[in-house]
Image (cartoon, rainbow, N blue to C red; front, side):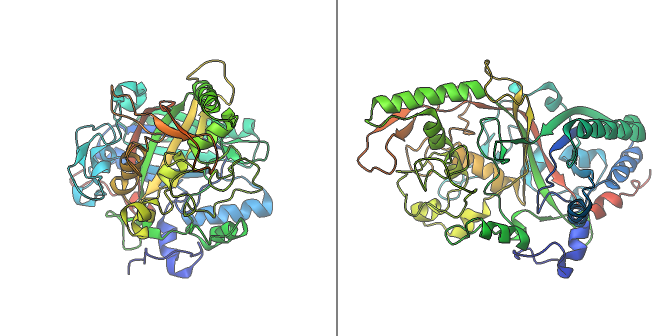
Length: 487
């Protein structure tokens, strides 16, 4: 009997889900929590028999959801570090393995691949449902060479609980061992190195210096309890049903589920971002009796101050915890948190209900589960623009088209969301090629309905350097890959 994916607030050791979680890869329902990682993108070589054999070998290293839970318990009790492993396949990976197409995951974006800019997708929630090609406004000419070729899959290796030097050495040694075991059949196309960055409070941050990953959906009872202790959820329900992130694995047994993965290497222009924030702050100060600094201008862009304080809740930083129990019911016109702010564009918290009379369940179904990690130089005050630094963005969902692509195209890249004239998301919004985005409207005085607004264009400080769509299959599918018929 298939699992009930409408459930939430469950525990990882729930006996009703034991078979599912034994088959499910880790890092889906709960982040793996390691500080250091390697992302190995590979192209399979040889005949189908050899390729399947290598995937079966790799599958033996993959960490299941139950394994992840046991590793977490072990680490708390003994301090022993455990290697974490995920394995995901692209559509070309399924093709290279000679998998029957009826056993392929059926998401249209997954099957097309991220490099395909011609396949149209229906991403509009109402009205004109004319399909849109290249809904992300990607320009593959800006992609790094390794991402422009064929990528059949990605192996994620992660390690924590040891110092940086030992973690890096252990991960490099694991890669060498994999290459020796798998031989030429596992052609490594490129390797990305990820590392967690933290602020003075020990909070995870990204390269612009803002606390990251605060409002991820919560599936497990223990995570919801932690959220409750951190401020409750009377104004924002962080829970999510399993069907937000799990999809049936057509190649596995009745207890087999997986998740679709969006991977994008996002380079960040740190100096350009903060220089432009200073210009915005000066511009706002010139048109208002209120003096605005770059930190406040940054909160207007992001929707939170650097320490995670929501600007919808107060006009300065200093919140004592990573508060997430808020919505925009008291700020429907964006007098505190601009309608174009990044966290409001990607998580409207009821804006679509008020503006379009959309059921709240629809808005909540667009959420994605973020599992990204920073890469590159850790300098947060570089003297040059476009340093080798940014985010290895990785998100999980049950539907790439209905979740990530919808969010990016219909919300972030849409200057008319949530209202006409709102402007694009100043962080990740992307206008079509050779098109300058319309300026957003900014207000210097927090929560003042009589304050003057000013137009100022803020965009273009995050660049996609490549990526791919994957499916993270069940362990049953990976381990039961038999040689193809006739091989």
